[in-house]
Length: 198
Image (cartoon, rainbow, N blue to C red; front, side):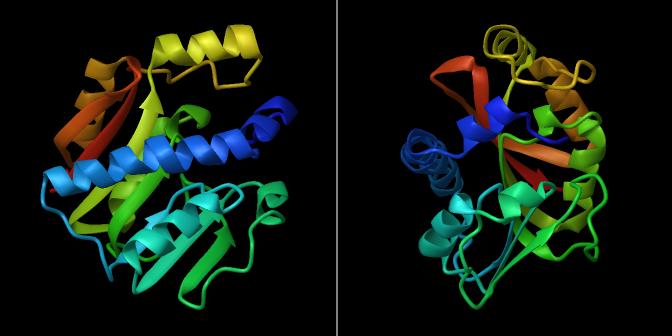
């Protein structure tokens, strides 16, 4: 799903990047450290990476063998800086990726599923391209948080497929993910999860 003008501006500014670096990405790294999971030198995917700032964070932190990032919006692609030689960016739909099965050791998703009309199809596609035993790090808001931002900030989230945490965790388990850990970000309406493909 495409971002509206307000969301686009909210996702592409200095404070958003600072928050991603100092809060969200730090939490992801702590989740990996907590479970003794090393993604250095691995093959990684940054799902719906927007303007590509998160690609830079991943490049610096993990020195991946190969790093892929994609977004559905050409407007975001225009903002992506020239990536490192082992980093690849492409336009793509998270529910239908033009990628082979089971190629990534780790996938990072900074708040994307709540933007998708069919978030389950997006999660299934991430499961498909993840290697068995690979990990998915995902940050998401739940139904009350999505409805708050929709009502008061006019963010244009899909009306269907909003989830509460028990439903989200059940669906992820049915897809084939095992929850290794989760933590709240500020409050429990925003969580970061670490999943393993089983």
